[in-house]
Amino acid sequence: MIFAFATDDKSLTAFASESEAIAYCEGADVHSGLWQFFGPAGEPLLPRFLEQVARWGPFIGQGRYQLHQGHGASLLELLPSVSSVEGPEGLQSFVDVARYLRGGSRGSALR
Image (cartoon, rainbow, N blue to C red; front, side, top):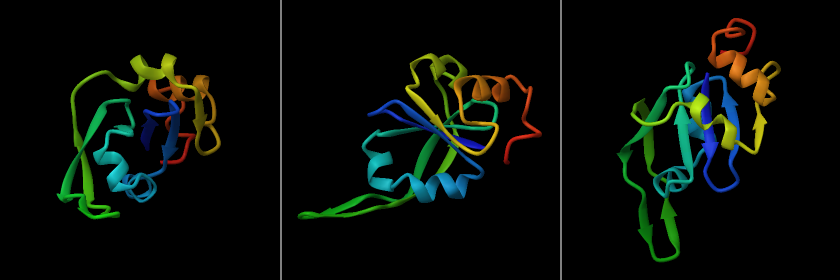
């Protein structure tokens, strides 16, 4: 499970895999700081760009990135500032996410 926090609207989305999160969160937006990522235990993840975001006049190349262990606040610490939650069954509310992060329902939510 990978969690993506949108810094603009403060929404949280749970993805079954890193590849799903990366496909959804465009590289240009990630590069601009519009997304923060967290691993299955709520640990911070940082993007590492394999191909940088490129700009050609009005056009933007998305860049490619992977997620790696980061530092900073955990998702549990950030959870009070989240405005909404979207995810698979079992991860659709603040309570669901907090329970998951505390290890109470990791087996029942999508991985």
